[in-house]
Length: 532
Image (cartoon, rainbow, N blue to C red):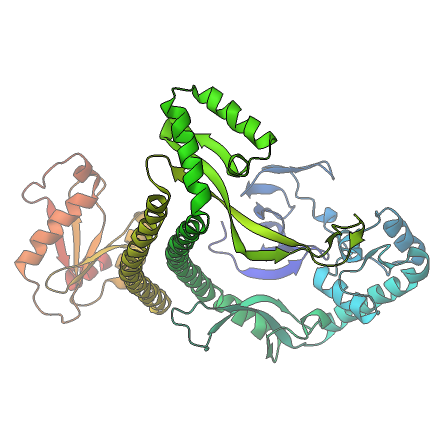
């Protein structure tokens, strides 16, 4: 419908995000209406705005209007420019808000200035950033300042429509990850938003300034895709570095656990040596009970009775593990004491500010089948075993870290190369068609549909080229591009025939080309046939 019609006008409906493209004039006019809000929509209407075709059928519940084919497009419902708001109207809007609601967000639905401009004017009126109702904004006192901010927003909007304004692009700064620990950290600046003014909230942010707003918009969208690739590459780099950091932390955690185990085993062995008499007596008493065929439950009761009688050996026994031939002793280091902040005076029972000394203790498992010194030796052996395991872990983790760093470097390099290739890569003119390049370096193109077939013949068939068509159902028009205008090898025609049948509907049914089923016409003869 629109192919043969001229674009007459481009208008915005009111102050809404709706653009009306008019093609043709009078009763032969058609309108393409583009909605640039919500999920977006495109409608094709006639001169009376009756919808002929629609991208997305929807119903506006607020206005009780249905957007569908053969319905009238409601251009009158587009948001129109409103006069300056009065104090009473502004008070009605703000009274409905709850305490703690953002003033900026409360004003956005009722005015067409946009969130960035409203925030700029509120800052200019002396309000704090993201000021809230009841928290820096008093309704009875600050409503006049809020109206002054809206008046300033209207003034700036009017200036933008009357004269050419500068353009500003606000950038977002992100720090790139570094594999080495050098202090030099690269930063990635990406475009975040563009405006015709430099707003106060963006004064300290990184930004670019342009002579006109149109230049800023062009630069923003021309570099948007490449910056998306940069952000995607940076996310992949962060993921690779996160995996490397996870490996490092896991290895460090294992080494720390082994070191802590060594310290614990060594300390337990030393406690056994410092309390050698008590350990020997406890082993002797329990072994004697077991030798006299006492029940395990009876042994536990006897230990508890001895603890009530303040027996020092019994009080040191914390638990019995006779099923594994072990028991737990609470051993203290008599030479290692800690001080509390305050304690009770031993003489008169009054509270004293003097620090009270307290002995530190550790629960130690004792094997009944070994002597006290043998138990200490067992903990020393465990410490030595943990030290050897730590050494092996350090060696293995060093190799694992080197391999992980090597893999990470390779990943970062591949990401950088892929990103640069995607940026540099340009789409060739023939990629919209079916195409391939032969081993003899001939370009062969074919149409995807009837329209492309006609376009290829009219636009891309030049002197020296060969037009190829097959006597098969669904066969497309092919052109062998021959820039040298020399003879084309016969082998090239055989490859062309096989490819032609493959992309035809006959290729789906696995039919083979019959002799004489391929028609090849050179450029000059085709032009003569066309003239006839």
